[in-house]
Length: 102
Image 1 (cartoon, rainbow, N blue to C red):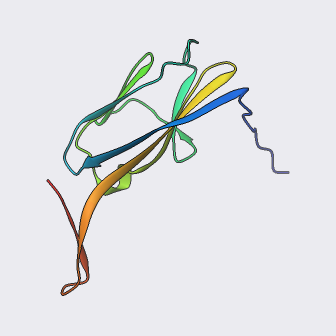
Image 2 (cartoon, rainbow, N blue to C red):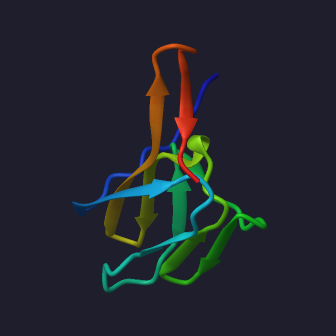
C-alpha cells in the first residue's frame, strides 16, 4: 500500500525569485509571521549540512552549485513562502557546454 502526505497551505507567497552565481552564498528569509516548521528544496525536507544552514526563519546556502537551483519552500503551520532560485551559467555553443560563473 502506498501512502503519502500532502501539505496544503492556507497562504502561499510566490514573491521571491532570486538569481545567484556558482560559488555564491545566499540567504532566504521567511517572513510569514509564524514559527517555521520546515524548509524544503525540490519537495524534500532540508537537513542542516555544511552547505545548508537553518536558523529559524533564515536558510543560508553556501558554495552554490547548479544543482542548488530550484524551488525552496518554508512552511509554517498555516502559511508558506516559495522561493525560486536560479544559478546563472553561460552556454558555449562551440563546446556545447554550460560555463558556470564564479
